[in-house]
Image 1: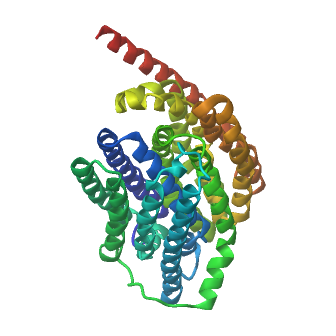
Image 2: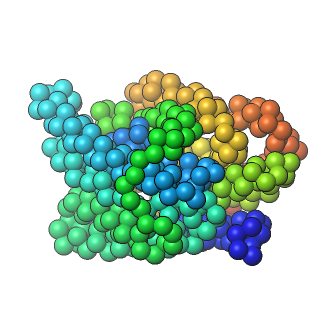
Image 3: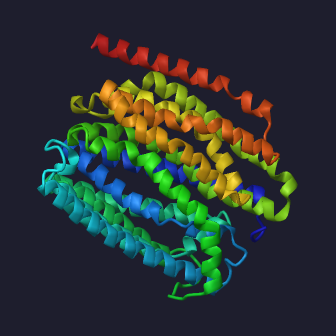
Length: 456
């Protein structure tokens, strides 16, 4: 119990705010994307995508599960523990920034010596400068209050959602205004920094909880690193798996082509993040609480949380596979016509989304090692198959690897959920017809769209 609310009531409340907030967030992202694609050239998105990939990579390379430790630990009400976590978070942000500066200097030096192909993204003169500038957001974000994680622990996601929307909305205004006035890639850079600054400021001002201060407690740090060592390894591999395609393609294709590929990945990410948000903001803290209070209810709670995710993700996978092209046609102009075909291929990755909840359940059980193992299975597929697929089939070939590599983990997730007594074969099968329903709906939408436009 938190106040007078039961766990079920808090799950519903958290789910409502998570879905509503994320839907609003994606609308803001889509508006931003549509406006900036009309004001900026595709090259800007290719350069920014690669710069963001490097910043994200360094963030994940230093991820020891600070937020998850606050959610899971029995010491989360102790100021010594919370402030040690915050101190680690600030140090991590500063280290990410310094490594980004070094990486930017390295890319500049290698490009100057002709190491990269002249028409590749790595050789573009703006990449090192943009990378150095956008990494400032990591320093700013490092000062974010731990009250965000504490609110997540108790499923109090209302304030978290408000902060995300306000920071995103403020950044949108700044970014679009800059792009309209200057039509420069710097609009994207300033927008990223502004989002981090607004979020950090609001985390200290509107989320209730203790004020953070620098502190170091050896036992707290030992607990964080003990739990997070496998998260750290999983994050490193997860970054390569999730972003390796863009890192590899950055050296094989032009900034414009990478921009098109990244926009398709953006649309896929918008859908995937809905389920990731639910898994991280609702499922993980729920499983942690159930395990602490009544482990016997875990299987029942697991499938209750899975059901809406299964229905939505399977329908979306079927729909996008048959209607991705018309979505791209509606959203973008002719310069981005390839986005639709790539989006359709990438949609196969949504077939695994339903098992993201399983991963959070295993993590709540303390099985972070399993998560790292599953991510590691995908690593050689991305690294070895992406360049081969691109060499033989172009961007569409690379898209098959991007969308399909995650599917190899499904048999193993089923095995581990069975091992921990939370698997029901019947419930795994009964939602599969929704995939076909989504495909039929997509075919109908596609035929309707082309029929209407033929009439005009």
